[in-house]
Image 1: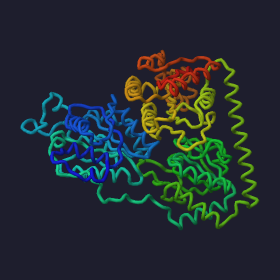
Image 2: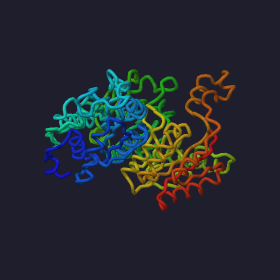
Image 3: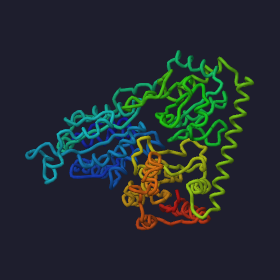
Length: 573
């Protein structure tokens, strides 16, 4: 929308019209909706816009709320632009909670809109006309998600819809970012509005920059450290974060562990990339920089030496919304990763030369360790390729060989990055730390929506695939032209449930039952037939030798035929 259009108020504009105009003015391209009886004013506004050519976000029907929120999440990962999701009253809001928790813990901004039961029983235009309008009303509809969102509000007047939307985006986009929630009574949406969709004079607060004194202290500690270590999880959220970290660690020979990596903090083949588990470097370190990482190690299983100094750096280094988090912190710095790491690089350069013999020796030792580690992983995958059953290692390696470095991989648990190296920023995204299942399929669809020309791959466990409401997601892929490749690692188990049980009761009755009680997902559904029912290509693979060809056929179906595809990979793990 141009400035002139954005600031021009139509004489007959309703609050719904101004809402859509305000979203357009803020660059929202898609209105992801699972509609209900509260939507008529929104639908009327979209229909009127279609008749007149008025620019509005593109409405997409998404037949499950979890998928809609996950799509907005995935779109933001690629575009950096928050999207709008609208659901039906209290019941629709309830269905968003799982993937909304993921968005909250992953600091993903989005505007979640919901209708609410009409305010009036009679008299007003838009008053209650359906049986469900009574039972769906709650005393506090937003109460069910208030702990999850950064802000919630109910539109009370049609004349301040512009200010309300401005406030919603201001809060969502202020660091640390996150989702916001707005309820919309249909009588209010249908009323004439004196508001305007023009962008207000409201600059966002600048992202946090590090305290210079704290950076100087950290640089002093790093310069003196013999065995420093960086542990990262979210540090590759932005391309500039990954670039800054790569420069810092290469220049000063700082090893990086990507523990439970959700973004590509460092290219997998970078010589300072030391793998995905804190041990054994954790126990050897005399200084640890926890870089935008909520859980740098599992205290009940491992930990650093008591004398090891520990510094945390991130936009919310204390993770203030976590009720319990007790990791030691000798220094805590609030800053974006890019700003903090760049400042640290400058401060270190004033204290030590990258050519210092001790740093050069550490650089060579770490590069040798990294290369040996990668060679070991490659050998393990090749060994598994000759086995009788498909393992996650071989499946991950086959995916890497099939999809190429530029593909976007959205991983909900099963893919092993040890065997599937990723080198380009924005080519890998993992499940949020909250672990709400059913995210990956929808997030991959959202990524495809934002990057229609890229190959998007969703790697999912069979439990995660079922949680994603796959018939809804396959319908979305077909109806909205979003061909993605879905690879299901199918072990007929809830692996996390089994693993956690065996960790606690490895010598108990549950172990004698192989940990399968309440983790069993057999008999397995023929997942490949679900995608075929939605016009896609599906194949089941049982043997390691057959997997590369199956993946090649699936990639061709997506990239050449523009059809969604699914490979049901029967694994043993």
